[in-house]
Length: 110
Image 1 (tube, rainbow, N blue to C red):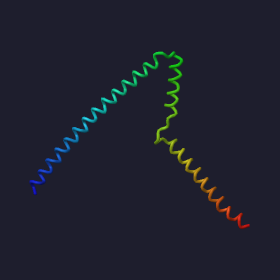
Image 2: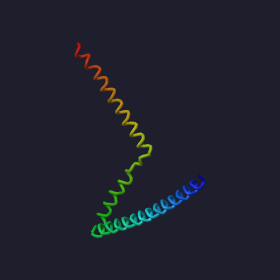
Image 3: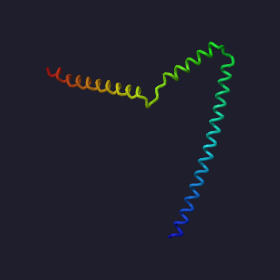
Image 4: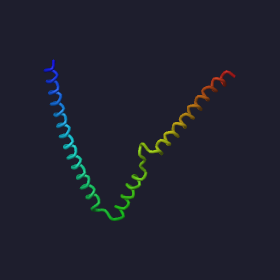
């Protein structure tokens, strides 16, 4: 069995090398695609801006800047607080529904 173990180790090492090479090729391909996409986006942005006045560009910039400023990261404290408040509101509504459903049979029997 030592020969089998040695053979298996060689096979494992070969497979690991091949997987690493494949991952490296994929990373290179992905980086090239990202570079191409970035260049295309830059070209489109330049073409869009070419025919615009300064005021139009400024308005577009202000709109995008507001979106950036309004963005709240998923892990932020505000997001957690917002979810907590929503949870409390849902619990209150459930309690109200539960109370009203408990009261409903009583009015029918009276």
